[in-house]
Length: 378
Ligand code: NAD
Ligand code: DAU
Image 1: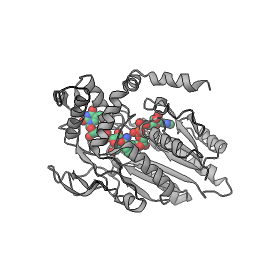
Image 2: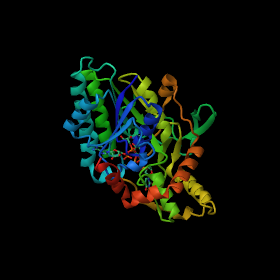
Image 3: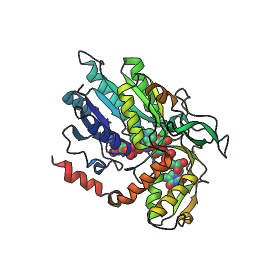
Image 4: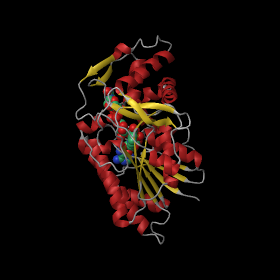
């Protein structure tokens, strides 16, 4: 079936992987990448698919209700995969208003425009989807009941049988009560509530997913892994917040994109699915793995850059532990992560070291000029 899908935030980290997957996998779909190109949006992330006939880029702010409604009418949009957001916790602590504007008002604006357009059609919501991408951070933080780690009753990769340590007995479930702590997670929680309200009030066919920390190529180098890879390469200090004891649950970004594909096509309307790979790491441990990998791939002595680790003042309100239980998605839709963490981190480090030009463009702001050259006068 032919479909026209708007993917918001497609020039960002996860969005670019989702756009690439949909453009390549579904040549008979029309894929519209809608992105404002904030500091985090970079069209160079999609240079390999930008000339494909089923792809269109539109520079637009998700808060612009009139422009988005006009786009839906012009393109007969029947699916929305919504990733556009302000995504960095540290920025939300400094500037919460921008997060409320984009993440809350922007999401509401998309929902209302979709409602107006879809309700104007004879078939109304039949065959339509509003799929909202959210985060595990809305659930709050979990206890570190076993700081030394206990064997998790789950496998990181079902087919391999490998196990990974969990740092507590509790995991986030789809039924876990929302308890956001940062302005970022509060804004994402609010947007999730609006999405569910549009289903419950108007019958809009919505789906929400909550994913754990992603890593992989094209992540903006303000986030832990790409920032640290770049700093190690340049032998700059690595600012570890607090004691580095906080735990995050890491998933390779292409596995998230595959989950989004699966859920968009086969997920049940009004349901929530957690996405994660049962892959918890203390920050300090993951940092050591990254240092060793960068050193090895650069031909340095493994571990020689460990002394770049610099403990700095902790993040305000720093959530202690995130851990996602994604068994519902695995059970109901058969999705599972494809990569072992060791393989994923090696691939990721190698990618950043091999794409120094991408990193240099980002850190110098050159990707804004890429937009001017490629798109502005089309
Ligand atoms: P990102 O910051 O890399 O990209 C965000 C994109 O949204 C950018 O291209 C930016 O230009 C665009 N954008 C921002 N404001 C906009 C606006 N007003 N109008 C239109 N476009 C706008 O983010 P990411 O890490 O790829 O995250 C994508 C989504 O996934 C977010 O909703 C985030 O909350 C969610 N998420 C992220 C992670 C993670 O680990 N990165 C994990 C779970 C969920
Ligand atoms: O859990 C999903 C979330 O993961 C997403 O919703 C967010 O959009 C995404 O940014 C990410 O949030 P985190 O705050 O967990 O990611 P970040 O890379 O900023 O930090 C990871 C951990 O590393 C966190 O405990 C803070 C710590 N950290 C981070 C940076 C940037 C440091 O110790 N030093 C740093 O310089």
